[in-house]
Image (tube, rainbow, N blue to C red; front, side, top):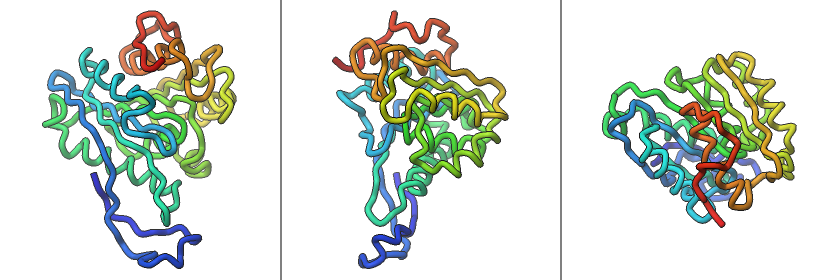
Length: 240
């Protein structure tokens, strides 16, 4: 996956080629689902790996695909020297969404899919920014959302989103705090539906096999109406 961008971080101005248009490349992985009209884009947190800790995002995408909820596109979330993270994180997500829409027929069952976005921490914040810009985006799942992708941009954009908003945050989140859930929920003023779940005994990274099982059920709660969330019962072990 690639898109064009110009280095824009003033602290790197002395670097050769600063300000010149260049090609940005990053990895995506596609789990197609010919039986579904939905494409789900998964965006991890800052410096997040495409597979996730112990392969959790890969495992989760396989389960979503196998159960026919939708096709899944996984991506990473990397900081690049010379580029302002707030802008590049959003640009990468837009490039992935554009690719999904342009290639939908080979990824799912239709040329005109519904898009569901799920993101963690900074990835969730980037989702809040782009969510109102694509009418195909019907649902978003924000896990432990942060404002690292740009607080002002999030506050300006998220209230314009008209789809469904699902937010989950740990009771003992040491990075964004459980108040982050209320903050993002309050911004979603235009949502057709919005709900927040605070997960007990859970930190920012959803550490532990119990919280991993809860995390594995979050997309089924947001995208397939699983009302048993946040119970870990029936969840998949994502990591030990």
